[in-house]
Image 1 (cartoon, rainbow, N blue to C red):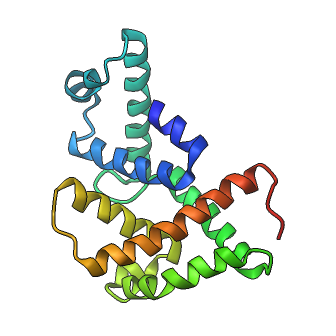
Image 2 (cartoon, helix red, strand yellow):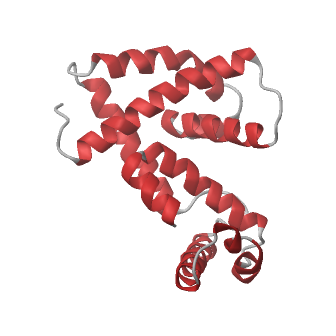
Length: 181
């Protein structure tokens, strides 16, 4: 919760990836917040009040996951909404001639996005921005598992990360009314 709040102010892309990680962590604990309160939350060294607040946040997320039917896979609607906002902003930025650096970053990443989308039916059903986030999240998981990453994959992720990072920066600027289309 505290990390999420900081990331949301700093980078919507990092926030979204963090929230996907939280969803998976909740699943790993079998959606058992009491177990999390005993095993996971204490590692943060929070006082009793903040620990209870964090536990309540996790309880709310678990309740939403159950209500939305994403207890085994998928993402909460609030996280899907962020993807929609980012996708809409992406489309606006591409249509505008005022953001050539954004378009250049997108077109550098595009061959890798196309390759990702060709790797499975599920990828083709999703939008390009979600495919990019899937790739970034997958890389996070590979690194966490200390798995070897090929040079080709590292190059693809580098281009995608730069592109999504730029989109995230534009999102923050757009929220502050600093983006012209």
